[in-house]
Structures are given as structure tokens and as C-alpha cells.
Image (cartoon, rainbow, N blue to C red):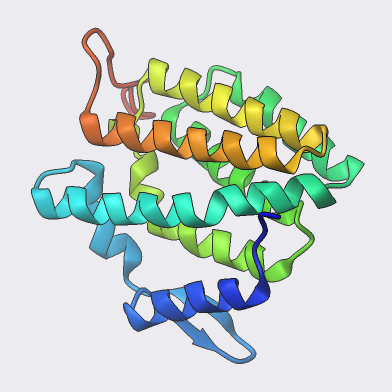
Length: 200
């Protein structure tokens, strides 16, 4: 069985804390420290160091999100599934890059909520903060957005079918696709989506 135990979640949080990326205190919860500042330059991938940090962030996703999707498929309620389908509908709209990025963030948070495990939800929130630069408008293209929506749809269909293994595999494929497209740069013919400012 593929799943995420509470001890695994605690170990992951402890590792992030030791790296100085989060701060955990009883009664206050988990707070991302200087992650946004540290990873801000990742949006431009201006150096090998930037690429290495983004690779690490995507590796964290690959470790955490597929098992989370597996558990989501075994525990999701009808209301959870309705929320995921609503987010899918929203993602197909003609959104600005910032709007799409926010829905993408909420989507992955909602998958974690399907597990009915509050600790996993908190962990995904932390991961979302760490990888926020990977959702920057400078890294979005129509092709990447289309591929992302297809990946999300496969995850939702697996959760809807309560097929844990399919959910795990769909999440793993989705994350690998996102990682490869970000790190290898735009394909020939792809254009970055215009920012909110340029579309006014």
C-alpha cells in the first residue's frame, strides 16, 4: 500500500526546518521563513544555482504529492470531488497567469484536503510556498497550461474513481511534466503568456 504516515510527514517537516526553510512552534503552526525571497530568482532561472534549487523544490513535490494523491483517492468525499471538478472547470477559462497560478495552488491544496489529514494539508501549504516561483507568469505558456490542466484532470478522475494507484501515478506524471517543462525552457513556437499588466 502506498500512503503517507504521520511519521513521514513529521520527518519531512523536520527536514525542512533543519534547512531553515520553515519555522515550527507549538500553538502557532508551520510558517515558511524566507523561502519566497530565497527562491525569487527561480522565476528567471538565471544561474545554475537557481536551477538546482528549483530542482530540489520539484523533488520535494515528487516525494510528497503522489502519495498524497493516493491517500486522497481512498478518502475523498463527494463534496471534495465536487470541489476538484469545480476547480478544473475554472482552469479551462481564459485566465491571466496570476489567476491560473492561484487556482493551481488551490487545486493541490484541495487534493491534500481530500486525505482528511490536517498535517498533510499544512505540509502541502509549505510546499506551495516553496515552489511559488515555478508558477510565475514568465514560466507559463499556453502549451504548459494545457499540459497542466490535462495532468490535473487525470488526478481528479483517479480520485473520483477512488483508484489510489492511478491517482499516485497521475500525480507523479504531472509533476515530472511540470519539472521537465520548467527546467528545459520553452519549446520552439511556444510563447509566454502576457502578464496582467500587459493585457490591460
